Image (cartoon, rainbow, N blue to C red; front, side, top):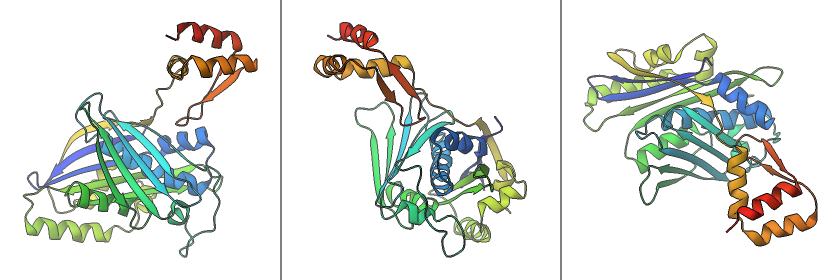
Length: 292
């Protein structure tokens, strides 16, 4: 895997920053779900953000979930990430096909539609942290910028991009998240705002050959930057036959009996990676025996 995330600090710890290249991660998601170009772009942006936001969490077992629930033809997006750069996700309608936007680009906002974004952090406490914001533009990066400012009170700049090849495979994917700490000086804030305004397109920079390091050098131009960590990132689903079997046990004897009586094998599908697991009637009977 060539995909990775870097974490950095700058301006004497007044700024913390993350940048990622996720081309292979997003291409893996596209292959698993057979997504249309606009669905790939939307899912790819949220996967990239999720991978970076996952690495902001400290605990090995911490899980971040990003959900977009909106009224567009995409029918929502769900992404889950851990603190180790592993991310997975899916869209409600992978086949969505709508005309390009006024700039001739993939119309992610049109596909997503009007709605909400939920950010759920499960950090092993009694209750997970849940933040919800209304989508501002449905382009995803601006919506996350708004989420950080309103729910976490952290002024942030988020840039995300996915560029497709003519054959609908992923050509480039990546992004950055840059955040100001509470003690940031006015001059730091002004300079960072000026830098961010100069960046018009993440995909153009990736197409020029920029790496996560050089992406941040551009965003943090004029600041002393120190890279703290480089983390590989990948599309990774932890589903397994064993986990699906446990899910079947949890639905209870009544439903399992009904499945067995139908006398046909059943197929269980993992939403996150689209993998199918088939269970024969004999296997279902074996699972029934394990039910309490």
